[in-house]
Amino acid sequence: MTRTVADLVGSTLAELGVGHAFGVVGSGNFAVTNALRAAGVPFTAARHEGGAASMADGYGRLGELPPVLTLHQGCGLTNAVTGIGEAAKSRTPMLVLAADTAGATVNSNFRIDQDALVASVGAVPERVHSAASAVADVVRAYRTAVHGRRTVVLNLPLDVQGAPAPDDARTPELTAPLPVRPARRAVEDLAALIEAAERPVFVAGRGGRTAGPEISALAAASGALLATSAVANGLFRGEEFDLGISGGFSAPLTAELIAGADLVVGWGCALNMWTMRHGSLIGPSARVVQVDDDLAALGAHRPVDLGVHGDCAATAADVLDALGTKATGYRTAEVAARLAEARWWNDTPTPDVSTDEQIDPRAFSRGLDALLPAERVVAIDSGNFMGYPSTYLRVPDENGFCFTQAFQSIGLGLASGIGAALAQPHRLAVVGTGDGGFWMGISELETIVRLGIPMLVAVYDDAAYGAEVHHFGDGSHGTPDLGTVTFPDADIAAVARGYGARGVTVRTEADLAEVAAWAADPRGVMVVDAKIASDGGAWWLQEAFKGH
Image (cartoon, rainbow, N blue to C red; front, side, top):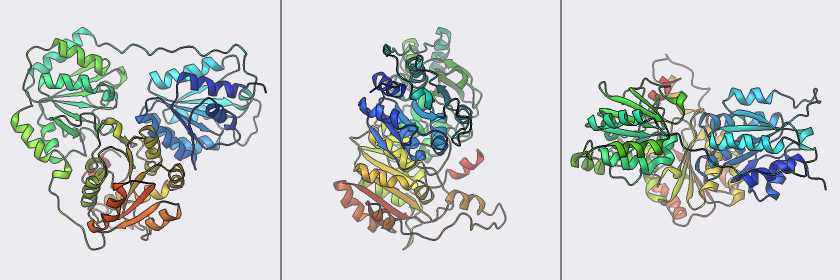
């Protein structure tokens, strides 16, 4: 049988190194998907292209190798575009193999401008142009995805896919580019600012996730406290001076300490409105520094006193070498004692708004955290509820947290949790979602049941699109009709059982007993329908709506 370009694309990607493929297979991507499988790449069939995209995104955030998403031309791509947009905005290294109509097929109902579509959501459009250029085209797309940390859509026209592959096609060996080394003057300037600071705080973001040891060593020498953006949650877990997430999810004590800093250094972190609470976590006299290997990122979200163009690990190591005497800085015995007592929301007293029929989401989250094993990977959907699992369900490190919030779309949590589970198979997968997001992504409940992977799905069920209820129903918009965003109560646990999962309804803390029994020996999928009491609008919600 003649080897085709589709076969060549699949085998080339397998040789370059990809971790897992996801997709919904139609006629346009049938051959290339089977070529990946034949070359040894694991494949998970999703129930919807949107779910497949989020699975790939979740895997790409936490896996060692990039994922592949395979799609039918036209409608297969449009079904996946929200997940692709989330991945692109999050700079997830990910390859999308999208079939495309043949060049001469101008009247196909599947024909759309795929390049323009994917570019519009921030992904990089690429194309396999011919049989002769196929390997070079695939390598170019792979380099951009992996070394450029981008989501790349490689369009595969059907006529090119079906063409015979060249007999002499060879996959070249790739070497990673050298890290961007900061200029000596920038290193000296940053070292001087650190030495002059009395209360420095380092905030690591997505770009600092691979530089944890170097940033931590510099912080120890300079007396800096350590925090992260939400997407890097867990990076400094176990450190005595770890503040956890900076921003709207900060506990009261950690927010106080960040706001009290006289120097804030962002490591691969945008220091945007979410991470800095619209600037309220930066004191009026604080100096601000941003370190990033993407020159365009420096100062993109707020003015900085010093922008350092450099790889985070290399920059931290160079600054450590340039520092003088080790400083105590913010790392005092008093700060250590306060953090040991009230670092987490779990340890922070809050009112209990539970009733006989509905559980306080904080009490539910606190109870869940105590029941589940420490070795977990937590994926978060979007919605009014999202702060609770993000802050109360503590994770062991930065590879234990999947936060798909760049596009702020609900409905991505369950699917991204499947991808995260496959990327971290030694950990218990936990998904935190609202009822709105759960219903939107429910088709993939069948996928995780079929895979047989243990997973707990915690549904924060207020029978509403809670963010809109609290935003428009807070009295500042008159007396609006909320009928468009509220729904009858539904038995989510029963629906879950219909999919083959276990399901339990939680209205009180006593109802967590069944969850505890499952958590002691997790098998299969457990869906927890937590009927949550109104929180009057989550504490972070007002911050979120400032950015709309």
